[in-house]
Amino acid sequence: MTKTIVIKGGTIVNRASEQALDLKIENGLVAQVGKNLKGDVQLDASGCIVASGFVDLHAHLREPGQEEAETIETGSRAGALGGYTALVAMPNTDPPQDSVAVIDFVREQGKRAGLVDVVPSGCITLGRQGESLAPMAELSAAGVSLFTDDGSGVQDASLMRRALEYAKGLGVTLAQHCEVAELTKGAVMNECQCCTNLGLPGWPAIAEELMVFRDIELVRITGAAMHFLHLSTKRSVELVRAAKRDGLPVTAEVTPHHLSLTEELLASFDPVFKVNPPLRSMHDIAALKAGLIDGTIDAIATDHAPHPRRDKEMSLDMAPPGMLGLETALGVVLAEGACEVRDVVALMSWNPAKIARIDDRHGLDLVAGAVANICVFDPEIKWTIDPERMVSKSINTPYVGRNLQGRVRHTIFNGATTVVDGQAQR
Image (cartoon, rainbow, N blue to C red; front, side, top):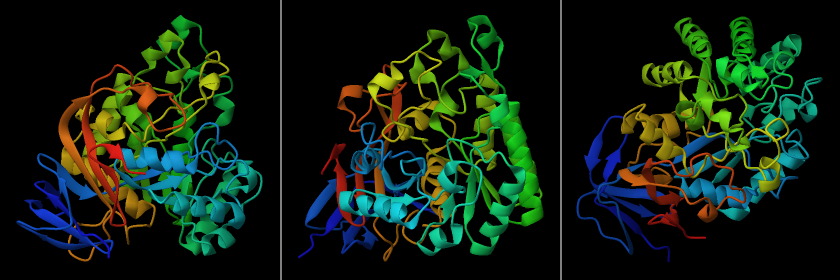
């Protein structure tokens, strides 16, 4: 017989309410919300927020092909510790996620791990080569609803227009990595006075902004839905804001590291701070935070990008871009104080679940009958990272020694505990 679970002493945050009530879970669903509830297992949530589990729109789980950096199981465990119940797996695997066989493999590996809902995204173009479209209709029929060539933007405007036209007919969303590659060759950091002083090749903001502008105009003529990945500049935010004012079906995300880290950190020549797009200025960070507050930016996504230690110990120009994010996202966002706790739940759960088209089981209000995908977190606790105790297979985190605020206490996936009192259960 399945044991019942009661979460006691927390504040349940739903879209229209915040209530200090207990929550009972039975047979994978929220069975009851009320006072003085009892169950077989009791989870203490004193001083904590009880909310729908987080959904990451942007996680590199590396499997298949790059298991030295991460596997679907280790990435899923990192996600659970970060309060996630669903991860959208990016398609830059080896082989890439441009066939039903690879999509099925990723999905089944997620089910085998059983820690979060692993939602594979599909490639826009075959092999992410930007030359011909992937079999989007076939992938859509296999359950893929988000398509991206993340890691590189689709450079050919005509091909991108055709992809959007197909996407509109299929009812799926394209997610664009906004980078005009001709403007970023050899670049390692934001183009600014700092990079000039350091003698490092600069990555201009216009490389992102030109593609944001181009694809907004392609959305305007096709009517297809577009999601902009990891926005990083003030002008990008302004372009998306204007597009939304015009009623265009666009959404956007920002990463915790683009909200908290600046270009000056590259003065250390430490590749842990090398990301794509690069860390920008305080001016850009202020614009990103303003975009969160006014609704221009819909979601906070990690861009979790693990790399083996030896790769991140290469010289700055040779090291691959990317950093870990799943275990630290909540702590970074709350430490930055960019938005209120309720807004954090919207940006990390409700909104991304809708964008990923999994809001039938994630990002739900916690009421009787809802699927029990739940995150319980203490928004006030302060903590620091020990990279050697992280569960990811990689340790390329930039937050060692930094004070974070807010930590996950319990995570429940499909009614089963995956994290209890901050400890992974499997």
